[in-house]
Length: 295
Image 1 (cartoon, rainbow, N blue to C red):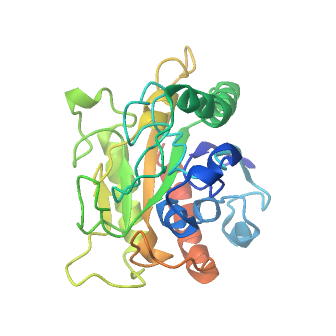
Image 2: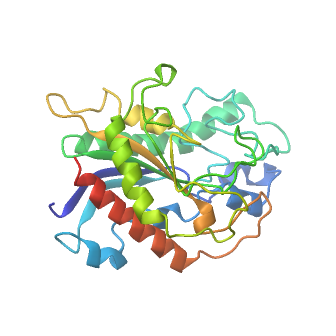
C-alpha cells in the first residue's frame, strides 16, 4: 500500500456549533446539543493520528485522500438528509430532537429553513462533491463515519433497544443482500460480510462503559441503520469513475457506549475519554487496513 489510504471520509454529525442567527431562538440547551452529537467522531476516525504510526504498513505519514467534516450541530442542520426534506422534522433543518423535544421556541419560516440550508448544509456538500470527484479514480472505499447512542433514542424506530458495538451498512438487509425498496447496494454482500468478520474479531474484547443487562451484539449489518443520504449520493453513478472498477461505499456507526456511556438527552457534558477514543481508533484503523487488503 502506498502512502495514501485510498479512501474518502464523510464526517457529517460531529459538529457542536450553533448558527448565530438561531442561537437566541433555541428551546434546547448545550446539554441536549451535546447528547445529539456523534461525539468525538472526528477523533475516532482520525486515520492520520500520530498514535497510529506503529500500525502504518508503509509510510508513517500515510494519509487519507480526503476527509470532509461538518462543524454545525446535527440536531440543527443535518448534512445526512436530502435537501428537499424541509417538511420532515428529522430533515436537513430539524425541528425536533431524537428524543422528540422541540428545538425552537417558535417554528422557523420556510425561508429561514432555506437560508440555513444554503449557508450550512450546502457548503458541506459542495466540499464533499469536490473531494469525491477529484479522487474518484484513486478511491477504493467511500466511508461515511458516524457513532450512535447505546440505545435507540425515544423518537427513533428502535427506541430503547440495545444497539451493537458497531453497525456496518450497504443499504442491504441484515445479511447485506439487496432490498429492492432501498435501491442498489453500495458494496457487495461478501465485502460486507468480510467487514463484519474483521470488526467482530477486533471489537469483541471491548466492553461498554455501562454494560447492558441484556446481550449486546458486537456487529450489526444494516441494523439499526442501513445507510443515509450521503452514502447513497456519493457512491452513485454520478461519481463512479468511467471505465474503471467502481469504488465501494460503507456507512459505519460506532456505539457511543464505548467512549461516552449510556446517554440520554440530559446526560451531563463531560470531556472526551482519550483512552477509550484511542482504543476505538486503533481498532477502526486495523479494521480499515484489513478490509482494504481484501479488495
